[in-house]
Length: 629
Image (tube, rainbow, N blue to C red; front, side, top):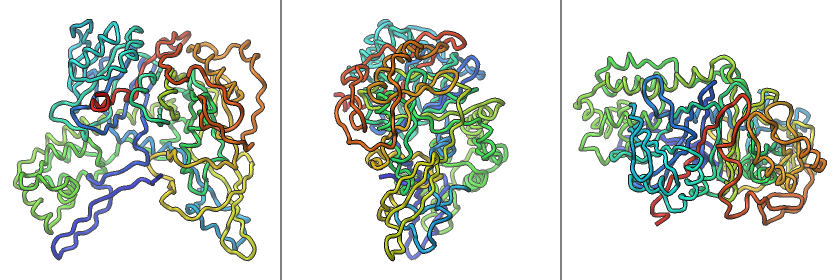
């Protein structure tokens, strides 16, 4: 079920005393995003390097957490001497809030005055520390880097074969199942190195934070083939690319979704279904662009990563823990994983209250409650030593500086942000997406609007149907559903609508409005979906940075595009395009069940201005030992 962003603060009651309900926004008010299964990454691309911010999520036993990331080369050293850093989940929250697609309809100004649109969702007016490189790990593996960073014990290793790499990882508690060996082998033989993370002994899954790694390569790539080991069907993948131009998938197709199959009366709550099926019509190897704008647009919209009210120097002078928390709240700090862990470190729960839930205890301290049981918590904390200076120093290092650095990168002159989205199932993870850039393509806005004209039957004053007019002028009349506000996607929430269990509006036609090849210059090249898309996808296996993705001779061999996205056809099943709609289905050999490799990888040889590619696997080895026992 699609749910809007939910924030839940615990309202406590004591004997005969009703405690106030605190406004959400406190440090221990927990936010539950719509879709926690999505993999998210931010690439910050500079002239000679790319910095990766990778969000890591995990559910399982703490001692079973293991995560491995193949890279084209070892991490570059940062200016402060470190090789790895931790990031902030706030970066991804802010990016979601600023770039996730919004579907809103507005009422037609000519709508009958006595015909009301009460079904579905409420309609709004949409106009308005450094390690030591080098050394040997034995068994054919070289240890290039080993350090603790944030909650992680991290290593970077290199081995000649997948067996060497897996054996070393397993021997050092970065446990990998046997199924990964052949996949590791493909990357090892390409000369990749492997960044591996596990939790330090005193850390738990609740301590997980994004990992930040800088590579001296200018172009991003995603070695998604490894992800098939732990992936679920139609896994959402969101990639933001901050560069000088709009980012494009170089060796994957690009799709534009048909807005007529989106459920507008529920604010696009079936959006993930639409994208998944549109991607299937693009051979299963396709991205859609959800946002593409110069970052000046974010600045104009007052999107800020760092709060100008943050003042850790002032916090460092405070001697009272309660006042410290209240000052942090007034300065605009939020309750990220990092901030909550700092509270636990510097304002630990006294032994007498170890069993009290964190949300209860710290919200009491934050609000300085003088009513039971908060008064007891506050009194106990005041008896403890409190090191405001050390707390403020860590807050500056772990929260303030990283967010200021990201903000400076975003708002440097000439920066452009692209948000790319796809869904992939394990059998589709057979080649690695490579991203390039095209400055000729238009911007893409997150806001999608349609005009709704309610239709009342007979003497009824409540509309039973609504005519929707889309941005391209196409019109579609649909039935008005019964109100179901829990299925509403509310604009401004922190994540895209991503429920894959809700069907497309089949009367609207095909999920994909257009299937395209995007190249490094010029306009999109449209192709016929389905069977033709499979042929083009196979040809894109040979795509290289700096050269045209498709040759002129290959383009001449393709059939003329004869695609009506609004045509309603029967649903088909089976083959690589299972679940997609329309046309004959031709299975793509590159996405056949059981395939694990492809001719396109993160080692594709670039030509021209970009000299290398960075490899990333998104949580391919968030492996549970019990799952593979």
